[in-house]
Length: 383
Ligand code: PMP
Image (cartoon, rainbow, N blue to C red; front, side, top):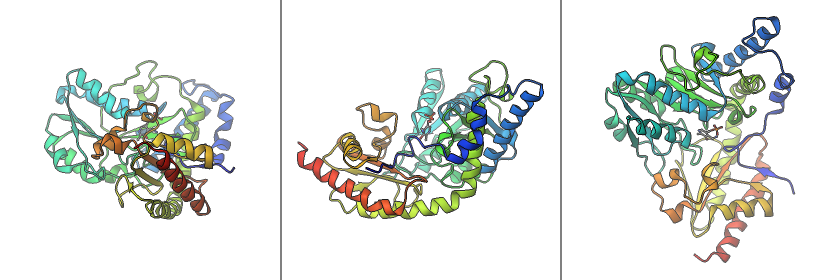
């Protein structure tokens, strides 16, 4: 049975071109902090990767990019680092109800440490309520964190407008760009972004690297103090293999984004149209303002976990239900609850995220797998 992988939001395979580019660093090269020629070669590899990541998001220069180990670390540094360093200007922080846990939990940690946290609601399509956001912002709001696009429901937020609101009153806008980067254009300068989180693996790069864009002039405190690497903002010897790979992955993503996103959008729309023919099936997330590779649904009277297992074992198709992290708990996804679904509705969710290996020819097999799975599970459902 040919496997059809449709869970790219959870993990992506390394692009073979990236692997070829970065495999020499697996064997080990010097420490980028060493002054000898081997160390300088390692340093150049990191600077090259910074340049490519900066290019993907139209950053002012390669110096704005700080490499970390993953998106979770970048979110922690971006949020806690700026909130703590700027606490003298105010102790208010703002975020939305559909953020990834690596944003919500650092925000809650700040709250436990005396910051005032406002969590802004979203509408039934997952769009951040701009009026609520505006009224949450005050001159004491130092950090506002809103994601570029949501990984579970695909909704793309109006970041430029959000940036304008934030800068009218507050200080910094942090954006989790993990789910959006490489799929839709991100321009940190035009979008008014002060801090942006990116993940290597979400760009077909190796796991083990993330990046934080820090706009020139933004000040933050390190969450991992030590030997002073990465301009003192993220100490620890750099993971050269993953960082060089992330750079190459960003370069390829920039070159191919327009063509590849257009190709996936057609497959996505066909999947959405055909899957919604199933009785009592609903699209989750925004019908139009959504990521081009993202199709997410809910089906009444059945469980997402059963859909995932049946799709995998019977059809060889890997799908997701909710986020990669929340799929291990029995709690319904906080994102689906935030868009107003009841607990029992949120349990029947299925998320398909397309990638470079998917083709239009796979659509009939996928649709058939989903239709038969839903029918079979409903036949045996006690609900
Ligand atoms: N933010 C978003 C939007 C995500 O989808 C993820 C998971 N890929 C993360 C942050 C955290 O990424 P990681 O687990 O690689 O740190």
